[in-house]
Image 1 (cartoon, rainbow, N blue to C red):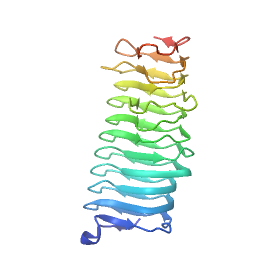
Image 2 (image 1 turned 60 degrees about the vertical axis):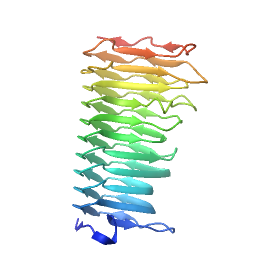
Image 3 (image 1 turned 135 degrees about the horizontal axis):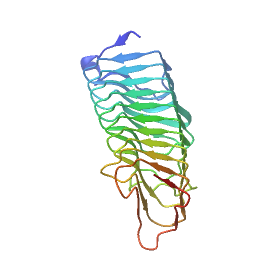
Image 4 (image 1 turned 90 degrees about the vertical axis):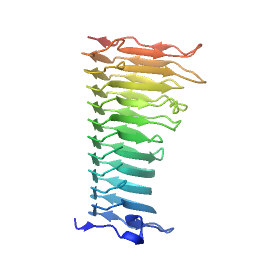
Length: 273
């Protein structure tokens, strides 16, 4: 990857792509060691793959619109990995976001986007902040960040399955109170592993969330392994069943906060040890 360096007075970013007719395919490009931002693209990028964004002094990238973002590396940037928007029909897969000084990445997606098999590791603040709900969030690893994954500012269902949230210094997965996800179909959170976080799962829901077959293991101090808040109207039953709690260091392991008239929470058939 031949490095591309900043252009000084030409642009506030090392590489800037502006076009109303669509941008180029970015393949096997390295943008490194810029004294400002690495990549700033307002053009719609059809494919961004096998690229490296590293050691830039500001946020690594801004992608206003992309379709396929896969097998890229964001690492060791002084601030955030940056902001990426993936449009409907696209995918964000196989990427590594590691060692960035603040947030690993801020990701916006269309509702029909797959987010699969990515690694968010050793970022100073949040590993991942999502500001909208993709079709699925599956098989990702969120490890050793200041906090794990934060969902905010969206009101759609979200399918979260088979992810690992481990050794983050705050929640592994936090659904913010300003999100109140689940206004549409119930959102299943299934077969995930939460291990060694200072808080496992913080969840806010308006409609019947399904949280089952998850493992919560190890460190949770000073926060409960699971904190559920039930908000708003309409309200439907929440299912929290067939989850396992092993070796958590703080009680209560499971904490439900709810307004008056809140829906029924099914917490049967969980394993506590």
